[in-house]
Image: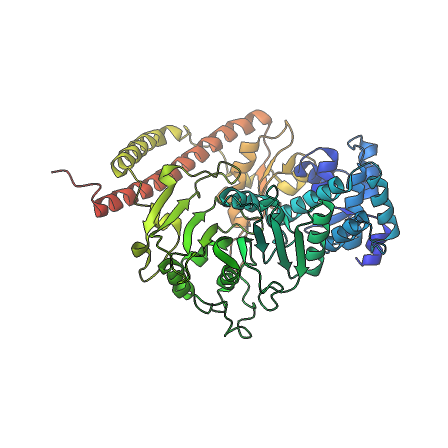
Length: 551
């Protein structure tokens, strides 16, 4: 669909947004789409992510009595999305410009009118903060790296040092300014930022002005290739740099004076950002840099890591909980550096604090336990790998090998004894294969409204159908053969699968047996995992001397 066509039907919404409007789950909206012929047809988007006209959705929800009044803030957000699409930051900057009183706003007349109407009843700062929150939530759900996630911001703020009066804070890749403004939210520090994306830099500056943060200055530009703050020396630098970017300008910057720890390879753009930040650090100042976990051990970065350790610059590495980053599922670390106060560029600090929070909930406590922390001597880090992964140095320091071995052995014995009890009592069958008789396809069940999808497998949506019976037959070898192509490749096709026709009582008998088999399979998986863990603990315990063979 063209932009003109999209704008002709008004703001568009996703299925997830319809669910929020109606106060139901996404699965319920998917069910409405299949079950109701009059549900609005997609007005944009693709086959896997359709968009619907907001006005049509509201009318349909009202007719079905599933709707609720849409707030003016939601209407403004949808109008911005219809106008700006993937360029929402440009829309946010334009709204902020209107609220800041700029004489030539770039907003379309209808959107500008909505903004002015809202500004009559809501403070401009509250309005822009509300739109920022919506944008961050949208970016999080889309897995976008366009903005630093709230979890990363929380972690950086937690481990940031207390700022002295009159301190300077710098973020060389500040995006829309979320991290920069959060770290210095109450200190009154002088904030400086740079961002490659012009719209993001403009929005960050305008938002700071609406927040009455007169000490904030954000400029647009590429920090590595065109440093806008060459003479700046900050007390604290925070940065969530672009990850995995190889075109960061290495060829143009080979002889740059910022590479005092070594010239980063093309694949080590994160270490270029780290050295750029370090070059802007005042004596005694600190850097908190969000890094992909792989930077801690990749071979190409070994020399730079070695210099960081040898000179006493890296003070702490924190392995953050899984799920901290929004845009990917990869683990991330927080590197904490400190520039020595003496002119030699080295420090007398003799350890690096390693903190491993990878067992923690990403929304839980960030204060490490004793067993999650270790002060590792520099000499132990300066080996052939210079691995700065916290888990590598904590693994053997706080483990109770005898206690772990005994507990795992007891769990394994109990699990093995329970396995036999999981198996159902089965008698010889008296007829042909169940799938050789009268059957019904899952596609027919779905059309009849008897199943719905809340994940990869269908579940019963009716008292006429037992879920365990349904899923048990779907996993049978008969249906597996239907899902195998002529080339021998396996592709599970749920809609083409079939289940036998039985009354509900017979379904429940079969469902009970299938449920017991699933419990048995889960028990086998636990036995396998416990066996692996037990062997690992025993091997490592014997190797470290924490365990010994009985005489």
